[in-house]
Length: 424
Image: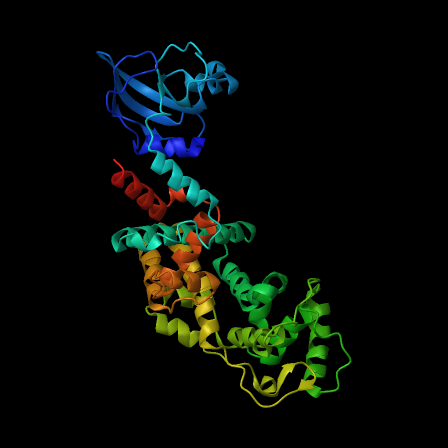
């Protein structure tokens, strides 16, 4: 038993209320258990009970032991002046309180405690791996809605942090985010640093000349410091040397990684694709948020690095011909991790449901992500038909399953409720 589990049991009244009495033997009726308080103060607020013939209204505090009341110094805390009931797992001592005490130790199903213990001690992919298939689709649907909302709000919070730094400049924020995304996981921090070191007002002056955009990006990335033999990287080197002095640029110091990576994901290739995106588009965020369909965004992201990169993965090192087009998997990655979150954040920031709804709708149109988490859920027969599903499942795994927050999970809640229903 934990205090968190005790709160859960009280919240949903999962205990035997037959002939309910206080520890002093007075008849007790729970009219309303109160609502869970997630802030400072008593565990449940605005409860209503009847003790004997007297109705009480106020707050309820829960503890594992009755002696915890004094151990937590509640008697000296003004937040606990309106307590009407002290609910405990075990009354280990009479603390002589001016309100009744209810002991639950012998009123809670042993099957419930056993099932909860199984969930907490499970070493599987998720705690409820063996029984997750029992949960109805209706429960899953509403729970995925909630999980996705949480995930998008978490991403929006990061975007709002960026906005606070650059004085609510949405285009600049978008530039930082999409650069981070182009860096994929291993080089994302470095790519964002590069973006932050190159304000959009500088890039806008050179966007019509792709070699100048590449010079700025590759130079700030620290990739133009070699003694090149080919003409193109030599030209980039000269261009960068001039603009570095003109704009007083400072290259980023975070190293870029190439090892254990497919050549198509090399940071050189991703920077070249990012450069062509800047070269071909103006006001990327404005275009993105006002797009009517996902097809428009995909066309915007349908970019191929300039001709030099058809024969290169690395500067000054020739390879066989292959167009360096941004693949569909990478496009979907950008949609899921940059485009859709910032459109949702814009709607959240401006209290505009149209943008929020559009973001959610687009997630339903994007293919489901295939990774270790979603593949494992699919193996458990959990539906993963689009990015809406996969984002919800990632949120579930990272924020609930990994942290054993089964009591706060609709799936875990349903499974525990089923245990109670089957053993009462």
